[in-house]
Image (cartoon, rainbow, N blue to C red):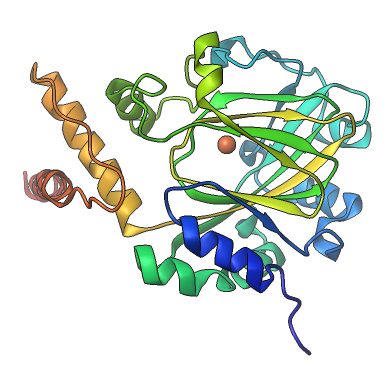
Amino acid sequence: MTKPIVFAAQSLASLRSVYPEGPALLDHQLREHPLLTPEALKSLALSIRPVDVEYNRADLPVGIDPTDVPDNGLGIAETLDNIESNGSWMVLKFIEQIPAYRDLLAETLAEIEPIVCDITGDMLKLEGFIFLSSPDAVTPFHMDPEHNILLQLKGSKTMTVFPADDEELASGEDHEAFHAGGHRNLQWRDDFAARGRAFELSAGKAIYVPVKAPHWVKNGPEPSLSLSITWRSEWTYRERYAREMNAALRRMGLNPASPKRFPHQNHAKSLAWRTIEKARRTLGRTG
Ligand SMILES: [Fe+2]
């Protein structure tokens, strides 16, 4: 049987023209997939580890401290059954923990693998996320650590994407706290708004979001369903290790320069941090 084609040639060309640093609007063909029906997704939500189902109320401002995000007071099934009216936002994380979804993720990402491999090397750590949300739900201003394509399956949303290298939006300390386990949400200021680029996502559209490019999302007037397919590259790991090295330098009272964006590779600091970590692990085993 021939595998369905998710991304047509034009979308692949668009992705290749911007990857990995520019956002790009794409078309996709996953809307009718049997693993993405309401019934299948409810079963998925109740099958994955409870810790991987995150949900809350959705009537949020663009910027909010994660500790201020209110519960919706409902269970998982109840939230999904009435998502059109209960003012909620839910994400199902790491859907690849269920084999059928792992296969869907792998097959879809295989279509773009040649582009990724040509530019950032092997496609690493494939992870998938499903977002279900009520009309007008807001996902506050935040950044994510992966190369990400968000596919809109039902309803519509506007995603506003900001430059990944703007240190007023996300400072060196913000990046370092994020890699030390801090929350993804970033502090918002109204004067940031003009720096963002808004993309309208109707069902059948997708967007490529560069690694750590800050963004926020506002749903349209209908319930929304989206699938996020993500991967890492050696570049993302080097950037992370350089940030961890910077955190160590900052603890020593220094004010280190931030790692540079692609195509810079951040080899020196990431190698330094990997060497320190390796020495620590060796000492931990023998000391
Ligand atoms: Fe995100």
